[in-house]
Length: 224
View 1 (cartoon, helix red, strand yellow):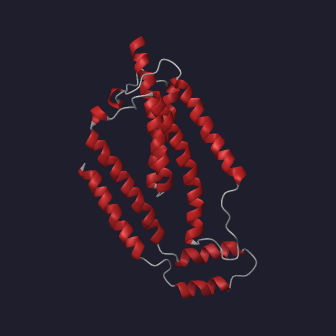
View 2 (tube, rainbow, N blue to C red):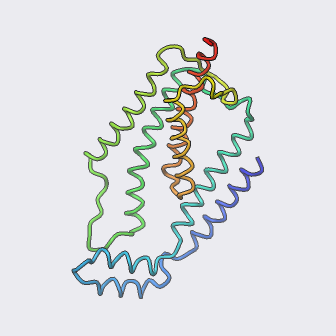
View 3 (cartoon, rainbow, N blue to C red):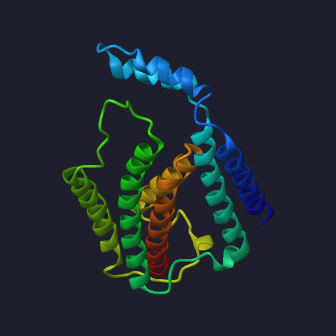
């Protein structure tokens, strides 16, 4: 529990420090160099100049959010304890978590593009557009298909409200175990990589997969 509080405090300090930091070390000199960029390889030159003057302001802010998310997650897990860390009470709740995970994944994708626009980190002579509807639909189809394929595991021989501490490699389904590990790895990658927008839906996906894994394992344990 103390670790969770510590992580949250680090996040708050990073957020405060990042907020007060200027965007560029010398904005006037930065703009002058950008104005001198020619036509050939203009984008490449722009990002080279930007990296020269851009401060770690946004890196601090992104990691601040990651520290706060990791801290809250750690605090909640410690507060509940092993006995209360379990899957939802009903199948409907598991399905709802999966649907919310889809919604937040799509929202994260859209919001990430909006943040790039808001921070104005692209060349001033180009227009930065939000994700195309076609791309958005492809991502939505991918997540929906992923959800349906794994949700089918709940059709029969599935138990709810199962303790995660009772998971055993002797009874798990390899396919579900693999997808659960992937979901957990994505949570870690998002937090370590400073991607708070993707960390939040990743946590829900991990809980969704863990709940299905625990529910299917319980029935296999009984059958054995």
